[in-house]
Length: 428
Image (cartoon, rainbow, N blue to C red; front, top):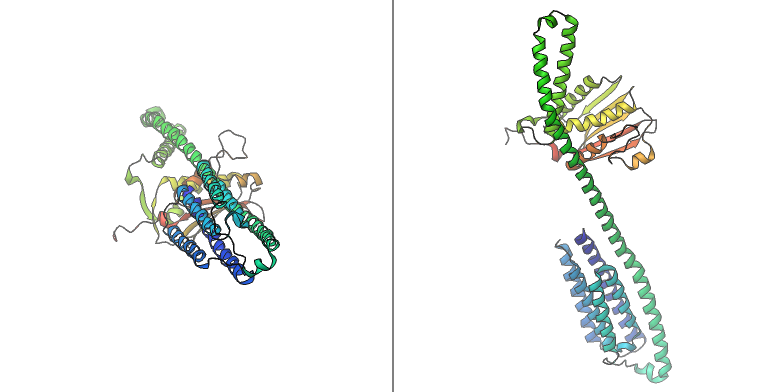
C-alpha cells in the first residue's frame, strides 16, 4: 500500500516537473523576447533538457512496476531543487523573485516524506538560498534597463514576485490536495485491511471452537448410536410399534447430528480429501436446494437454475453451508415465500435469494457481512451472512444485499468461475 501511494505521488511529481519545464520555457521566452533581458540561453536550456531527461527516466521507473520508496522520492525532490538552483544562479540568484519556489519543494517534502527527509530538504534549500545570495550571475537588463534604470528592475521584480506567488499558490492547492488524497486513500485501504484481518481472526477463533466442539461431540454421538442400535433389538421395543417409531426418529436425529459434525470438520479442512467431490455446478445447486427444501420445508420456494450444465466444480460442505445460511435468513424473514435464482453472468456465477419480508434496515445494509449484525434478540445471532461473506471473499467473490422496490430483500452471491471450475479428469 505504501509503495502504491508512493508510485502515485511520483506520478504527481512528474506532472509537476512537466509544468515546471513548460513554465521555464515560457518565462525564458518572455524575458528574452518581450523584456529584452540578456540571459544565458544555452546553459538554461541544458537545465531544461536535464529536467526532461529526469522525467523520462522517472516515467520508465513507474512503468516498470517496481516499488517506489521514500528515499527515491527524496532524491527526486533534491534533483528538482538542484535544477531550480542552477536556473536561479543563471538568472540573478537571490534577487530573482522565483527564488520563493523553494517553498513549494519544502511543502511537497513535508507532505510526501518522513520528518527526517523533510528536514533534509529544508536544510538543502536554506543552504542554496544563502549560496545564491552571494554567488550568482547578475541579470543584464539590456536596452530596457539602460533606458529606465532601477525603476524598471523594481517593476520587473514586483511582477515576478506576483507571478511566483500565483504559480506557487496554484501548484500547492492542485498537487498537495491530490497528494493528501492519495494518502487518505492509502490510510482507508489500510484500515480496511486491518478490519479484514480482525474479521479473519474472528473466523479462526470460531473455527477452532467449532472443530473442538465437533471432536467432543463425536464420542457421545457414537455412544448414543450404539445404545440405540442395541435398543432396537430389545423384545419390549420390537413389539411396540410406537416405541419403534420413536426409536427410528431418534436414530435419524443422531445421524443428522453426525452429518453436521462431519460438515464442520470438512469445512475446517480436517476431513479426508476424497470427501470433496467433483460435480457439475448446476446439478450440485439443484441438490443443495432440494436438500434445503426437504430439511426446512418452506411454504413456497421458487427456484430457477440457469448455470451451464457442463461446468464442473469441486464441491464441498462449505459451499452448501454458505448457501444454507443465506436461505435460512430469507426463510426467517419471509416464511411464506423464498425465491432462488442461479445464473451465469460473464465470468461469474450469481445466486440471488429473494424474500417477501420487511427488508433490511438502512443500518443493517451498511453493515452487511459484519459479525453479529442481526435484528434478532438472541445473543450470538448474525453470523450467517458474516461467514458466507468471508467464504466468498476467500474465493475472490462477494456478497451484496439490497431492498426490493415492491417489498422484501435480495441477497446476491457472486462467485468467479475461475475459482470454482476444475478440468475434466479425462482431459487432465
